[in-house]
Length: 243
Image (tube, rainbow, N blue to C red; front, side):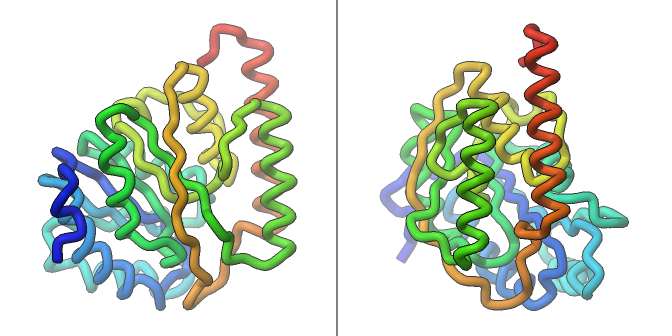
């Protein structure tokens, strides 16, 4: 049964998936997205953004999508970081709406159906995880990072770094993003909030990884995100006209 039979599909949608060393997840990701995403939009494109993977992610993705007209593969020659992947996805988006989620299969793409009714009244619809499927140390790090970001930017959303967001593409393309790290997802929300754009927050499920290892808890990743957040804050304070 069509899971969106009672919900109006979007006119057009770009979906992009950040990927770094996800060779075991990619076949499942491509299979799942190929079946589910067509139900959400009349016109759509699916993009894998390989951030300099050192395993076989690039080769596996290239082989699996070569006969799929709706899919594209974009690769960074070296690992640039999560924020740079988001900026690449935004630059490459060609449809009216942009949705992004990670390629690690910790989210259920079918839950995007719950976002569609709100596109009539909101241009930014973001998720928060009902139950985070992560270890205690990762949850503590995330909580501390959220407190840090709220102290600087007063975002006060439930889950600043939840990788399950549906946003009007033209809004994203008009943003001037300072960062290229794990802070970039939060910076996107901050820049949109500065424009007085209202967010709709919805709960989604979060599942343990089946394969691969997360990199978000890496100390270098955390330090860079905190540094770029502070740098952005100081630039905003020193330039009142910056949006």
